[in-house]
Image: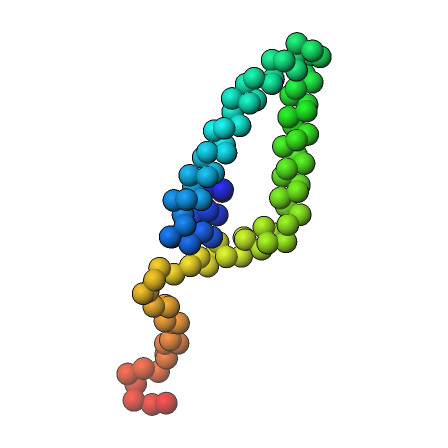
Length: 104
């Protein structure tokens, strides 16, 4: 879902930059977690770092969902943006059942 939202909402000229920051931050957090989880497990128990991580992730998700702009994203994904230079589709014209009979 994240990749779909990024593709739909980020302007094409900034997409590469946003994607690289996304990957940089995602990959930079991995070694920090690998370093801190064993320390936490040795100080307390194996469950404590897992519960702490679950709480942090839940708070981050709730915080993100609380932003009004994030809740409005779903509406723009259904219709999507048209590529530059494209034209809107024509509405279907009603078909007359009396066509070709000569009468109105």
